[in-house]
Image (tube, rainbow, N blue to C red; front, side, top):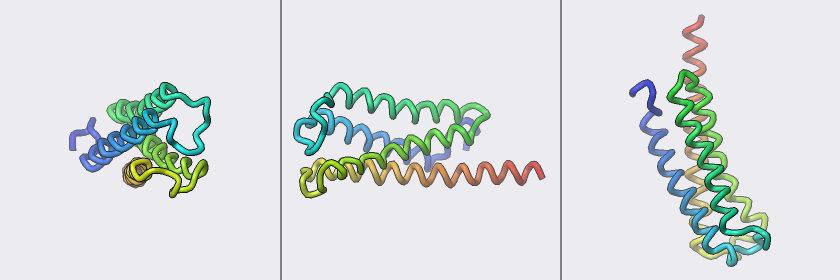
Length: 137
């Protein structure tokens, strides 16, 4: 592993989550009128802006990881993954059965990919910090 690059498995999970997250947000933005329970004031442009804001957390994690602040970079990548779990909030607005199959698939793809990224990044944070503690003893 190159010292300034994320481990390959985290890179893979990051790419998968990026795709899942983008897929869900594009579907949400383009079909917002058909999402049950969505507030009428929410526009497709606001959905895209929310996606940019969330993706910037992941990008920040990548950039910070390339510095000497590896654990902080991983924490930002983990936080980016955690944002995917927020897709479940759609079910607070309407039951699963009230959503289309495509909507449910994009929600669950995003949630599972985000959770995978969150867990893998968190595990790596733990290993990174424990190695640092062992090295200082």
